[in-house]
Length: 299
Image 1 (tube, helix red, strand yellow):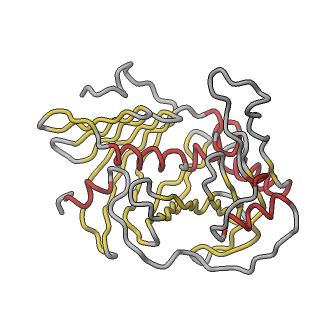
Image 2 (tube, one colour; image 1 turned 45 degrees about the horizontal axis):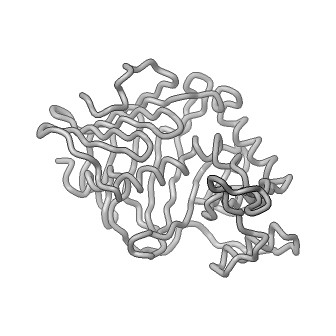
């Protein structure tokens, strides 16, 4: 089957919007009248946040601390911190935290309306936190290169710059990836982290960690109740162009031990409850050596 237009759009890093019911099973909400929990309650229902819930803006050039105080420190519930520590340890502890890059090979599938619309072999290299080189296709592969706010596409016709929306979606998915979430985002100033209780994902019993990051994005991290390996990450973002809310989710499975790091070999991606991509890794390697120009727009 050819890797068609739908697949290419998906690789750009998320294709068009589909409205479907949200995944997962709802659970009762228990409210503790603590400032941190109160902030989570307001944000969960889309209500305006109280002033003490909001991260304060950082200092602009030339401003004094008295004019614009620094962002408040992170607030983490002790039980939530325990869950995060168990997750990091389950993923490999120091080996997971110290990993600088991941190269993976396998097959990627594009899905629309529940049916596969295309698939292709791929090779992906991510250098954390924000560089990647992703190629897909057999004889004349398409290569996507990203370095922070810059992105390029190379194919048989030459090189073009990735559209801004494509770069935005890649950076969004990369920021809230399993690796960057647990290595960087949870340690940023102004983050609110709470124990979200118990739930089920695809009939698996999970523990939930609720987060509001420094950008006031609400996330949920679902951890396997027994192994504490991440099962799912979900978050809600307002599209800057359409002003519509978009809900993203990644579901992780088939963990294998690679160089002392538990690595998900099967990743399923959802947008607004609609499955649009599945990645099956057949091989993975951490901290490989690359040419100096590997993340620049050259073949």
